[in-house]
Image (cartoon, rainbow over all chains, first blue to last red; front, top):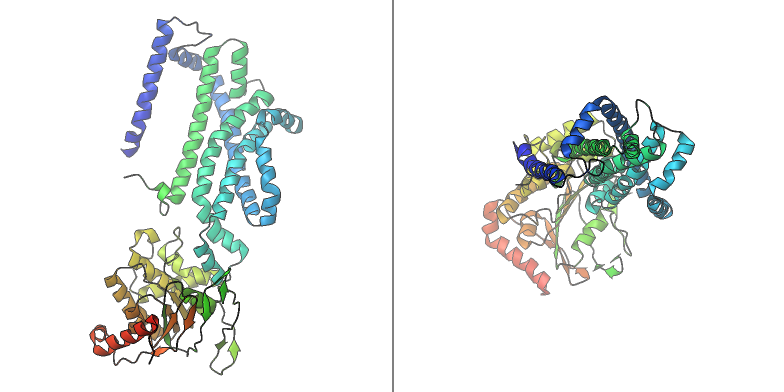
Length: 259
Length: 242
């Protein structure tokens, strides 16, 4: 019931926006190559549903795989940097700098190294998603309660046990936040990767559907692919949020429903 | 003794016998907590020494299981259940999991905390959380129990109840206890001797022996109790300590 109540306002706003869009297209008789009506977009997606479904699945593979890889890498790298001031001082600024390099500029390199196809798009999704996880992990580790650290010191806890039993769980709220940001970014990374390194054919991903739609002036198909890639992002975000909630619900305020 | 660039405790001297209960009172900022943390080995000393002796008078270094700490904030791990929190010290010292959990459950039962093992710390009241923290401090059966204002954040009624429980637990365990408190009544009610730290940085006065015929609730209302409190108070205010 709570979920229905929470979903109602945004769904209502979306429905109203779609109606306004539909009415505007009809009222000003806009040409479909400029702005197709939502109903036309839906019809285009439906008539091409097999290709759309395959494309969505392909993009989802890249985004989910890239995200999972980024989450593991981000936590591992963040923990490594968090374990040593020296490593942190040496590598963190470089990680920051690396983050500033635009993905579209790296994507061709990925194609050179990994070839056309899923491997490149997955790597591209991973590259954009890894930084927020790394940063939030490091941030979480650094803000471990010194009082709790003292308890571990008193009992002569080793480094690994301190990380596993104290620092990692206490960083979880921060890591979950980083992962939620990364989930959205992973889809962007996947689609951008597909623009450059995607592959045509039966299993062409959404990024390719968008570029071919653009070339063929099939704006309705472009819109449909954009909407589907947004759905992939939304789904991934939902899965990550739910996982986070499951992990935090019993002890952290961020997972407690607002009253 | 210096803590960072600030001298927290100038001079303190006390010899604590095994099984004794000593309370430390003093001005805030007078180095009470510093002294306790130094005893526990949590602070490096800028001067002086702290020595532990075994029954034969030999100097020994206390192991992690010999010292039990209890802090004012409780310091429970919020993501662990009560049971897992109490078992933590044993777990960190490599005691097998099942054995550690059994010891923790036993300690919780002893403290009449049976039934909350599966709860999370945030689901408990402040008083309950402190009792869990105390159970964690006692689970290794420490020989020295170091208590840093454990009930400082609690209301008066809860505090008195917990004082009585603490007294029984410490007596039963035979541990030596050092309690830092800002409450003179609490110090007199619980301790065999009270160490007064005066000034900032603190200087310790001669410990005041607490000689009361009984330690029950009625004792807190007796003339003797009041006069001992007055003695401690006088020490704090800078009067002559008899």
